Structure formats: C-alpha cells, structure tokens
Length: 283
Image (cartoon, rainbow, N blue to C red; front, side, top):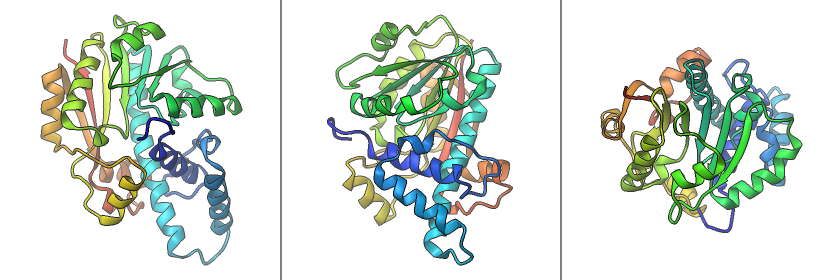
C-alpha cells in the first residue's frame, strides 16, 4: 500500500460486504449497512447497477461472479463476527482491530455495547474512514482511532496512548492483513500482540494457506500495490501462535463457513485457501 493513499483492498472488501448487504449472497440474513458508506463514487455506481441487475430474470455470468465475491466476504465476516461474540461473552472488554480498513463492527454489532474498540490502521486509510463515519449512526462501542506507521512506531506505544489497558482481556482481530506481510513482519507484530494481551485474551487471525497463483488475481493485487507475500498451513500458523504464547482453539476454512452460514450453497471452491484461526492466551 502506498503511504499517501487509502488501501484499495480495503475498498474491495467493503464493496464485497455491500454486495452481500444488498442481498446478493447465499448467506441468509447477512447485514452490514455500514459497508456502502465507505464506497467510492465508482463503487456506488457499480453497486447500483448490480442491484438493478438483481431484479432482472436473466442476470448473466457477471452477476454470478459478483455474487461469489459477496458470498466470500459475507462468509468471512460472519465467521469472524461469531468468534468476536464468543470472546466478548467470555469476558473480553476491549476489541483491537489490526489493519481495520473500513470495518463496521463497532457500528453494527450490539454485543460491543460497553466494549472499548481500538481501530489500528495506516494513517491514510484512517483519514478517509474518519471522514465518512459521520454518515453512520453513533458507534455501539467506544471507538478510538489509532493511526500507526508499523515501520517506525511501536504497537504497544500507540495503543497505550490511545487508552488500551494491557491488564484487561482483549479480543484482537487480524483480518485480511497477514497475507500481505512477510513472515518475519507477521511474527514481530504477533509478538507485540502477545506481550500486550492479558490472560483470557483472544486473537482471531485470517490467513491464506497458499499464495494465490491465479495470474489475474496476482496482477490485480500488484497493480494496486498490495501483493500477497505469505501463506501458512494450519500447522505452521498454530506453531507461530504457540511460539508467541497463544493456543489455537479453533481453525476453520471457507467450506466450514459455507456449511455453517450458507447451507453449502455458496460457490466458493476457488477460495478454499482462506482460513481463520482463533487462539487464546495460555494461562
């Protein structure tokens, strides 16, 4: 990601959630009304065309491709939401979102009432987000925006200045980020998270099991300046988490989410490389 512009992948993720919120998904009942507030003018036009197409009897291959994108984002979002609910029910009173992008959980999840939410992200993306959140209803949790330059600033320092309490159990979300980091950079941040986690904390990590080899996907990611760099097997991810002091309690993939949230109807076979590990601090 270039230092002077918001993340383009963050916009793509928001567009996928907006597609699903518009009902173009097999995930029954999925809702994320925050997503469309973060779209560019081009994204808004694309969504409007899609909604119009959805009302027509002959939708075509392009519609099905876009619905697959909506399915992918709705499934990943639903799986992480479920893990967040479990963490809050288990006592987490803080939520830290690493690489928050255009995440809307603090504005749409009622379970976050009374929870302090810290959105950690690159300053350019965060400036764009803050300019748009005024269109949303009041946040459910207490939100602190925490800009950071990971190459120059300490995660612990910026969180401390924002009011995060390392003695209070925290739920950490690391969604759509680690695949764009080197393995060394991921482990360094993971170590910082572990040192700043009280007993009873939960870490939710979205990762890929392979580097996407499809030429078109790689060309798109390279063109927007955010190429994928790393991948893990579930065993490798568990080993990295264990070395930092976390114990994996659940590790699921796209097919699991499809069965749970879409009754197996979503066509997401090409995204089987996506997984989520849920880990907790060891006592």
